[in-house]
Length: 603
Image (cartoon, rainbow, N blue to C red; front, side, top):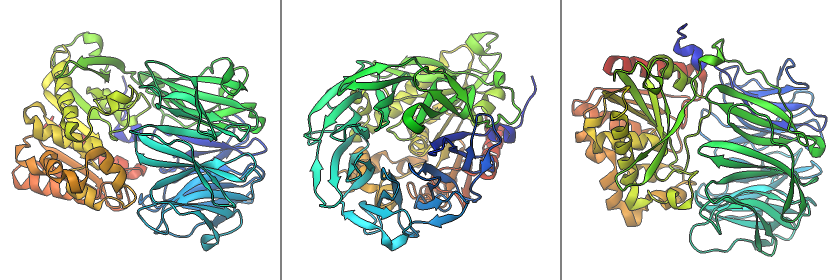
């Protein structure tokens, strides 16, 4: 088999995040230049036209419902302080916000395309307010229509253009839904509740007097529900075992797509509302990969675009005919010349943890070690731990994962307790004082690996990003004898300094998950890897972005310095033009080339 170098795998392109223009033109994001920029197509497999030419990543695109113009977002160097821009049909770009010290979160166009809404922390860095702005206005011309006192976002204009759907997040597992009358300023609370309840993926119903969303208000799993403006909740679709992750609803036609999460893969259902809680379903879309999301409706909802991915399918945009389910790939993001048949699909496995709880994981073996064939216990393993922790490792495409598999590594991706996708109770099993129970799940996963005939128990690596970086460091300190090396990417080393220095807008939400500085400081210090750094034996690679607003770079600096002082082999790499993660292709190639060399040396 031909061996492809790392840069080839990291040059596999992605196309995603699409939006239809009124005339049927499709705009989308694609990272052909090394960072995601705007491109457009007028037909499937056509020659795409590049619309933006920046060094920084474009984060979203949304076409006007009435004009051949669109809005896109972009920050600077990964600092997450996104600004909004309008791109006209003639290619001219107009800055709409122009306040680089503030975050701007898109809230959608009005039905007539004359205005748009957004949430921003320009008044107070710790909270988000709601603004409405004329399409041709800039900067200070936005109207402040509601002063918030928390993490607010806008779910869109009502069909009559007079109201806004507003969501407030108290934590990742607790939200509220409101309706704001733009002219009067009246805010109606639709979801008063006790405890933690998720109300997410909310959008206006076609009649304008209801909202469709997913919620776990009445179930352990997320259900599709209709919420009246009087606050009455009616379940539309449910599943006792699996979450309904989200719903995309076209207000004019009542056509909708919702997604069911089955062990990390998803199943799309397409249909049309025939009553408040009844759906006429259409044939299931014929899509590859096992994962599809980011639905964008075309004119008259006769078709929709969706981003499709899988472990053997790099991300591309497909267009689905709503009534028939027939699909066609429109974009042609390339595999950098690597044959798709060489990519490896994971197996869903489960292992028992310390308390008898079953923990799911994705497990991929390189060619030659699959199913134990020819296995002689000499396969190294990368235990790749997702961030969040309110997240789930799903089988989307990863060039880095495929590179490791091509080089003889197995890849083990556990969804430890606290992960989403397995019900509400499961997500709360790692809250605050139970934080290290999820690290015990890693220990149990390694025990499972030790019993596998293909695995070399002395060559197991812990790797993870963001919260996954904390899990790497915690694994190295809690179970130092298990690991041949650790790779910490933008990870938390010290919960106290992390919470003190993270972005003002994030602190309250993060304290809801990890514990508060006022009430839980002693506990947070006790579980912080930096305070147990003397237990680290394995070589450590630390990777970070200097502009990271979520996990400030000081987390990388302190763990690298203190581990090195104790004689641990440490390598640290910080990029001045990156934030929470390494997004630019040239930086990713440099970063992961260094990681590979580090693993070649120590593993």
